Length: 498
Image (cartoon, rainbow, N blue to C red; front, side, top):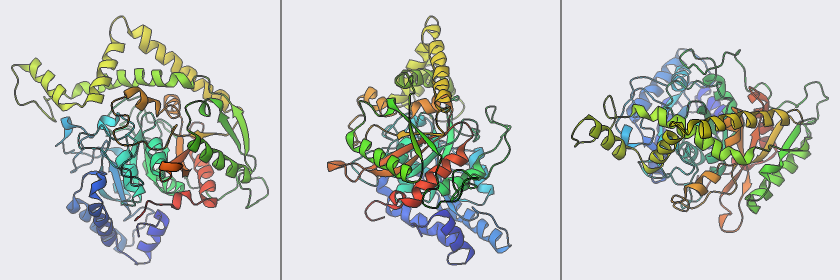
């Protein structure tokens, strides 16, 4: 069952090959057997089985739905009623949410069964899932390697087939990068497409919920449910409901004659020269080039483009995201909820000790940077300048989309690195996001799809191809990803033993 996609699991449930309860029990056993991956932070079999029984009752009454009875896991940044919602931090280690995030509520209403909450970098700050208070997640392909971050727990769980689909969040690449490093598919929708209500905030103008699965078609199916306007989220965009599966298995140009061997005839793929320069490892470059050649065989045309502000995306991102984190994380003071220091002299001392003991090193580093750039005398020089360059980055993409339909390139400069290799070098860690940050700063949708592996000692470590589309063009982007997955087998490959 763990090798089936969501459509196949739907068929298994509908034909009574397995019940929703048996399916939940099956995946719970797999999670228990792979506990050394440290992919999950909270498992509550009683809540899971209660949800599975409720789904069974709906099925018995004749209710139908594409997701009814299917399993899902949630990144621990999504508050989930009755479950611990810690954001990977000591300061929220024992917090149990009294309500559901909108994404969680919509999936629960659709009948999906929550298997657990997945591990993550503390408050989504990190690129390796080594910043979690609860310990690092291991990459199922090579347990000495990182799975990427911050959605590393969700990525590892999907890659190890502990769950068929999991939620994640992407602030600067936190869905696409771990999807790339673990050989699965991950999608970050357009900013505002998916409600942020109930997502524990890191950087409010960047955070966006999304999905991770083995196949693009599975992401499309679940995106149908989680997207849509939410009045409780002031950044949620009002748009008509869409079926993100509507273009799957169809030719790129609906008016063109059907050619099954070249379904993407007419598609223009932009290749930013800034994504293929110094810093990109040779094995990643080779895998990306092979994937682009496959797209040419499918009928696409490769076009050279430029995104000139790419190099500035790192300082711009870390100024803006740190400033917003400094503001958002000020609420964690030990007064209302979460961790509180046990010994203190007065209120101010309690604030200091609670935050010092409750936050990890990376979170404190970003709070300090954010407070600095927002302070008097530095706001104009740093934060305001970063916002101006952010607009320029967004305009670069719009200029590029006059020359192409999709933009493609690497997700990460390298395959997954070893645990501990970069943890003491924040700058090297930040550089791992060079190809994903600008997309988030512009608010564009992006994906990672598996397209190969490294070489030599890293021959078991996956490579992901990044696909970037214009605003609210997720259906076409998923079509392009799906077409590639129909003629390659990268998304079907799994770690040894899975």
